[in-house]
Image (tube, one colour):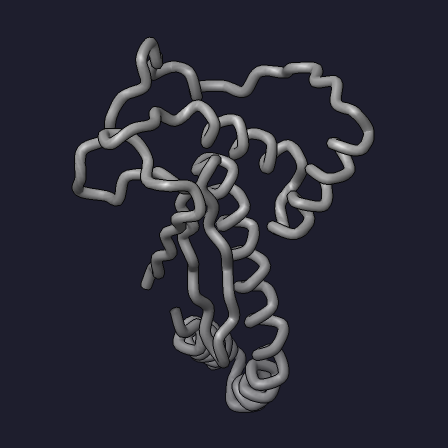
Amino acid sequence: MDITRHIETLQRQLVAAAALGGKEAQDIASRLATALEAAGRLAILEALTEAAGEITRDLAPGAVDLRLRGQGVDFVVLRPPGETPAGTARVALPGADEDDDASPSRVTLRLPEALKSRAERAAAGDGISLNTWLVRAIATALEPTGPAGREARGSSYTGWIR
């Protein structure tokens, strides 16, 4: 996604609004619009990053990453191993209830310190919180196995949203 057109729209709207104040105000707004380009890009990137974080929380154990490419931004959809691509049949978990993911529940988990440290390093390596990493690990472990279930571990899917 190229955010340049969004920045240019914002600049045009600023100059158009200043036109109501006369030629001098319009000239000042034009100079300000150019100076505010970097701040506008940063604000848009922060909003997109926040949106990707919210989508990732709802998508667990999958994720959405934001990647910068030149003047644009790309969304990368990371599916967990074994997730069925869109448009194909998905095998339901035995006894799974549609309301399972309706609201989060709190659980106390006691881990040996060494295991907790390893999990924290893995989560940090993935750029996610320990909680999100644990939710993904549990969801992956509970997926059905066999030919109708997930593919071999180590498979991954990457997709681009435009």
